[in-house]
Structure formats: structure tokens, C-alpha cells
Amino acid sequence: MAAFDRNSRIHVATWNVAEQGPPINFDSWLGLTGETAPELMAVGLQEMADETQWSNRILSFLTSKGYVRIKTRTLGWLLTQVFVKRTKLLDVSNVESESTKTGFGGLIANKGGVSIRLDYCGVNLIFVNCHLTAHDPKVKERIEDYMDILDAQKFRDSDVDFILDHDYVFWMGDLNFRIDDLDKTEIEHRVKKGELQTMWPHDQLNKSRKEEIIFVDFEEGPLNFDPTYKYDIGTDDYDSSEKQRKPAWTDRILWMTHEDSFKDVTLSAQQLYYRNYQEYKNSDHKPVSAGFEIKVLNESPSMPVQFTTVCDWKPGQDNEANYSVSGDLEVSTWDWIGLYRSDFKHPEDHLTYEWAKPQEKNDESEIKFGGSYTAKLTGRFVLAYFNRKKNYLVGYSNEFDI
Image (cartoon, rainbow, N blue to C red):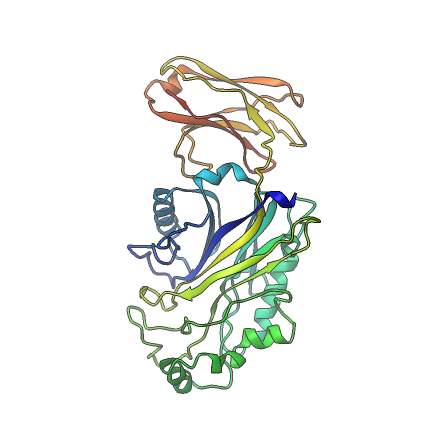
């Protein structure tokens, strides 16, 4: 197995957008200014007031760059999305998501965590986006939020029941940890002089991790960027309001690797960069991103639904395709096969669908689309099988013309 391992690039991006609208350009924050584009992209937003506006803008931007959104999940004002390069779409399987409310003892969704997990090239990954309890002295409450998210989220895959079972765990969000012992004037003075390292021992998250009461076995890159909170919106100036909130590194990205998941391959994750983006001024937080190069197995998962070769279809006529189900896939009367354009943006982006037929494993079935569906269609298309149990696409046909 070791002969088949390779490295894959991942970009993780988080931003507390303070109920503001999206910027005009996402290029730098979403990691598309370098020479090597990431294969996977995970985006987490907090305090998002207009889900449709943000979701559509990010979707439009990343699909124009050759990505497909494989999952999106919201909880209150949290939004988590994961994208994959279109050329790597067949490497993704077993996509799930979970959410946990932590606000007011789990009663409301003003705080909490949203995760998306998937299998990719023989390994499994999970991306957790969270917004923890605010205010300087609430360290204990933030730690309790973290523990609640870990305890509450469970997954259908028996090998990875919980968040920390995954080969790779990426945790991002507004963790809301602050800087102790230093007042606002002193923090701003040290930021201006570039003395960031002198403040690391005062960071509440660093202190809690050193005591091994949170994020045990996780790693975080050095905080070699200015504190990301709290700015006067539209400026690079820290809070000038009456509240005079102290600057802090509230917005963070950490990761954990189970290096010994496989007998013949040692998994690893190397952080390539960890930074904020001062040029974005439309929130009281600065966005943060981190890039990683992770070890994966260079093998695509075997799709449980296989289509026989689909020849070109005739517009306005009845057209059909054949497929079979193999493996341990649990089929359902709610499974369906969608007709997509070849450049579809996400699993819900189908033009039409037909219900899949219940069948015995490995038996071939036929799916038929009536001529009324294709009367006005021309271009390049693909069929994909949506499985209700997996809640994801589990088989793709070849591309064909209408």
C-alpha cells in the first residue's frame, strides 16, 4: 500500500463576518493566488446573517475556479461548506454532516459547531467550524462548548463514530479565546512593534492547551499574524468604541493527525501557511486561512453504483441508461438518479431525476427519462445516483451529449 501514497493540498478558511455582506473578491482568502490550487477547500463562517448571499457568492466564485461543492450545512449563523476540485470528484465518498447547539446550554443556535466529514483517496477527514462562548473571562464556558461538540456529534460510519476518530481533523472558527494579563494599550503597542511572540504565553487557548484541558493532541501553527479581533468595521484600527475591547486571536485553525491509522503508511499533515488577511475590512474580524499538505492513499474509492456506458441521447425522445449496485450499499425506494450538466455545481444541481428501481445486488437495472425532459436540452451531461442512506451521490456515468 505504501507505494501508492501521495500528498494532497487542502485549504481551510474561517471568518466571523459580523452580519456583514460578502466582499467583491475572495481570491486571497480562499487560497487561489498561489501556483498550486488545493484539491479540497473547507470554508467556515460565523455570525452570517444572510446565508443565501454568502453561500451563492462563494459557490459562484469557487465553481468558476473548477471546484464542486460536495456539502453545505448551516446552524443558526454558522455556515460550513466543503469543495473539491472537479478533477478529483470521484475520489470523494461517504459524506456526512452534523451540528451541535451550545448557546444557553444547547437551547439555541447562536453558538455551536457544524462539521462535514468525508472519505478522500483512502483516508477520512472531518472539518469542524465552531463559534464558542464570547467575553474575556468565559474560558471555562468555551471549553465546555468544545466538549459538548465532541460528545454530541456521531456518524454512521462504524470506523469513525466520533469527530476524533478521523484520520485527519481540522478545527476552525471563532473560538473566542482572549489575551490575559495585558491591557488594550499594551497589546496594541506590542502589535505595532511586531512583538507578537511576547503575547503567546498570555493567549487563553495556548494556556489551556498547555494544561491539556482542550485540543489535546492537536497542533496549531505559530500566531505570526496580528490579532484578528476586534476592529472598527471599514478600517485596520482596533476597537475605538466605548467598550474598548482588547485585541485577541479569536479566529483559529488547529489540526490533528492519526499517524498510525494504516500499517504500511504513516499519515502526516504539514502546514504550509497560517495567516490573516488585513485587506478585508467589512467585518470586525479579519479572515484567517491555513494551507496543508497531507498524506493520502492514491486510490479512488470504488463507487457502489456503476453505470454501463451511456451513448449520446436524442433530444425529445425517450432515453435510457443501465446501472447496477454492488458492495454493502443500502438501497432505498427514496434513491434517485439525476440528470446533470457535466459542469454541475453541487449534488442538488440536477436538471431532473427519476426514482431508482429496487434491485438485487449486482443485478442490472434500467432507468428511463421521457422525451419531455430532454426536448429543449443540448450540451454535455452526466447521470448520478443519489443514495438516501448516504445522503450523497454514490455513482456517476460517463459524460454524454444530447
